[in-house]
Length: 87
Image (cartoon, rainbow, N blue to C red; front, side, top):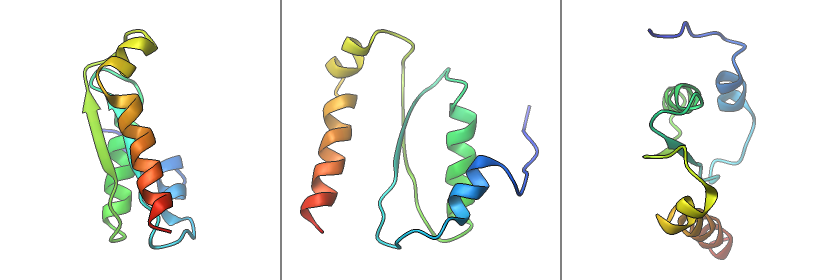
């Protein structure tokens, strides 16, 4: 069931926030997560404003060690470090 968009939703508020145009955004979500709906909403809200969200969806709902093993943890740190290096 699709959620109704609200101009006061957290996704809308974040998308409307005054942030640097060179801010890179990545969101990790697992396919069955309750947060997946909000990540998709944020992706849509940002797209309407010409911004992009790199949304990475993978299987999940398991221990943190599994996320480290499937590369999500190191990939997230690599993403941040690459952006800091480019500053």
